[in-house]
Image (cartoon, rainbow, N blue to C red; front, side):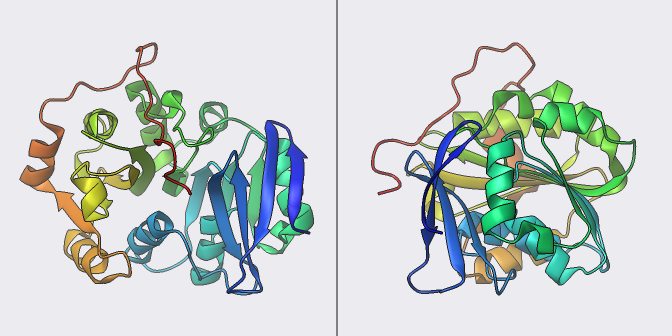
Length: 273
């Protein structure tokens, strides 16, 4: 089972977790892409995934209609299926070879009420019905870079079309020194969703090192008190920034639009060991 596997867009490596016999990592070009524990889908190894789960846990109780743009090993869909039984979920993942690998090796078929579409995020979202989702998660990367077409004002408009009025958007951003890209993404999201929060490790939040930042957004409001408490009290001890502090963080950064020439940040050498 461990080893290198060809997929549609290159090659990935499947690695076992020496500390957890049922834990597996999918890595591409030396960059860890996904971690799953086949026996315990509520175990989340990556810190940024823990932050996303903290947001999801604070949403209204009960099953969710969720859309995940970016699939890999489907860590969060497995988590939602386990913590919110009855949830209906759609995953958009353009790499059909990767999806087949996860089906064959990582028990993807065991996740109830999960539908995987072999499509890119823009195409998959365009095909979804209006006001059909409680939650949309954008966690799509090409290597270690976020696809720019998933961070534009035009795409945010389509995401808003699919979300219910009280729905929640979660975005995983990777950025480094200065956080210029993160600020532009926040400016873009804020043009459509008036309620936003940013969660990240304090060092990443200050732009001292490259890492993941999580954006939570909604048109109806966010559980900010709970988010602040969960972020500070979790294993990651992250910061949660919102309101005037977040406005100052964005500091007039321009939104992203289709066709903009933008250099998407990539990690410096050695970040992933």
